[in-house]
Image 1 (tube, rainbow, N blue to C red):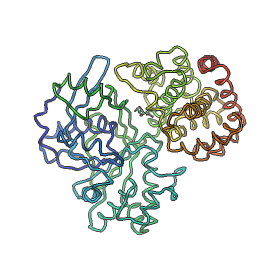
Image 2: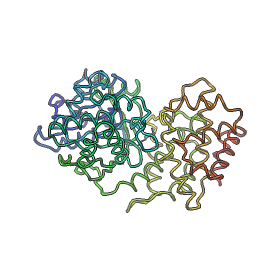
Image 3: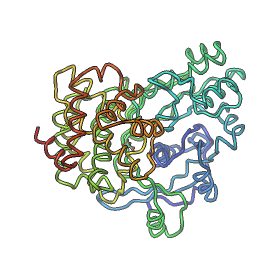
Image 4: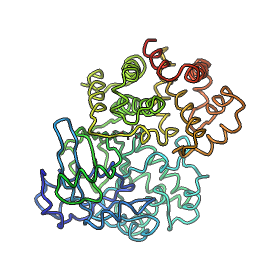
Amino acid sequence: MSQTAKDSRIKPPIRIVHLGIGAFFRAFGLAYLERLNATIASPEQRYGVMGVSFRSAAVRDALAAQDFTYTALERGKDGDIARYITSLCDVALSTEEQARILAQMADEAVSIVSLTITEKGYCHHNGALDLTHPAIAHDIANPEDPISAPGYIVAALMMRRDAGIAPFTCLSCDNLSDNGRLLAHVVIELAERIDPELAAWIKAEVRFPVTMIDRIVPATTDADRAHVATIIGHEDHAPVIHEAFSQWVIEDDFGVLGRPDFGAVGAQMVADVAPFESMKLRCLNGSHTALAILGSLHGKATVSDAISDPALSDFIDSLWHHEICPSVDVPDGVEIADYCQALRDRYRNSAIVHHTAQIANDTSKKLPPRILAPITDNLRADRPISSLCLILAGWMFFVESEYLSGHIINDPMADRFIAIIEAAIDDDAYVTAMLKIDSIFNADLIRHDVVVKTIKSWYRQIEADGIDACLRIAAKE
Ligand code: CS2
């Protein structure tokens, strides 16, 4: 162990509330804060976190029994390093502990509310607040009894404004383009429906910095828990597993309450996150979605298995080289070929058991920034789109096969897909109907015949010749 548990009982004061306390933030944001706290001499100046879960009590219950301290196990190419994370102080479940959470968010010691709630947690439709979303309809009718994450933020900001307390900064750490702007949009729109003066105050006073976050964190399994126990010598009910790499790029735009010195522990504080975000979302997350979908069709259960397959590996190289990298606005000083080579090495790390099925969850929400944005840019610049279209055809094929073989489709739009599959008279009708889902594919994109034709042609070819043949053809094009 690089640290001991000796400090685990001395918890820092809660100064950050994190909404959506899954494995990712525990292996990422809390790892930065833990390093930062180790540099701060006075315990009262350190940063403690209250985590909030929205769905399940599992994380809270497992962590409460161990004082919210847990092991973060880094699995790099030089072996394992276990570290204790002691900066998490409390976890609460939104459906059971609303008053306690709101009181904490409204506490003047809290300067940041950060979020990893995945895209569906933003309750938006094409960037605007989805007023038909049941949780949003509920929160508009009952603003002091929120259930959605934006509803919690608006309610807590209202409490702070009414008490004359400066607002916290809202720090979105989700894998979305312009994550801070999206959060600002939904929060302000929701506040407008509840209290226009509050909305004006939020607009003027609250900061919503954009961030780019990167660390591969697979879901923790029983085997991981057993492995961690052999390393630390006792049982940990809620460890997290992560790779060695991590990158956090943060727009340096925080409110009057300031921010921790994230830069002192490796985060990049910048004026514009966009180039970092476009490179990461397209090169990493785009190839991840390709490996998840096409890899699943190819019978590969993990990313390291998928990238070790010659057809998939050549396909990913060609995808990066011809279709993704040319569409990226590369940050100054970065060599994009080296960036992709580093990604390949990260994917090959077989100690990180990252299931393709885990990444394939919620793909409908992931396609726009990862796959559709580069297609749009390539069409404009007259660059190829064939491999990107193979990913889309593969995804439609995957959704249909999952349903027909009786598996659950893990996607917030699953019911819509099932209705389409059941109504379609043939493959062509199925693909046409999928392309008409306007919250995924915008009308401008499918106006291009070449997009529709290429997807349909790949779909037929996957069915006729199988995925391996398609991958080989696409890699050679
Ligand atoms: C993955 C990401 O599940 C997914 O969609 O692509 O969680 C990915 O592992 C992270 O963004 C890496 O930073």
